[in-house]
Length: 151
Image 1 (cartoon, rainbow, N blue to C red):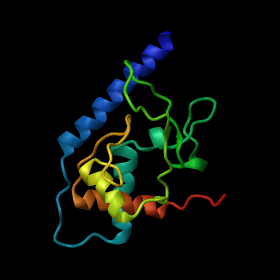
Image 2: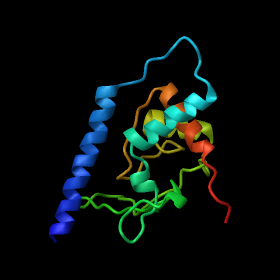
Image 3: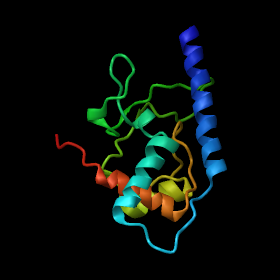
Image 4: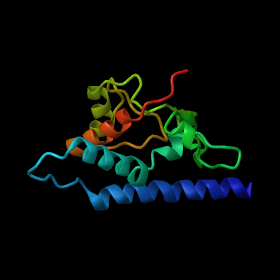
């Protein structure tokens, strides 16, 4: 029981940290020159891995709880649970490496409007983002650069 309480506290801290990072950092400042594709991918990688912490839910874990790099952003069971029941709580995070099943327009909708590809409400625990176009496109460039293994 104590371990479950610790997980819930860690989840609350994680959510607060991610939210604070987006509030404090705000949208990135545009430069006069368009960033090179490689720079855009690197920025997207930074936003995905260090700010939004997408791998925490979208990457499976091994038996010790460590993220599995060989299955990076390939989708995974949700390992956290809400303190109180939450309607429509997702039990699995989808694969996002390579953006399978998403057009760029749909991915932009998720990242800029905070709604699903067709305007639907995103299922918790997915965070609702309202990113500027530059940051959203950087994330999309990074995710598209990841080519999931063919099964």
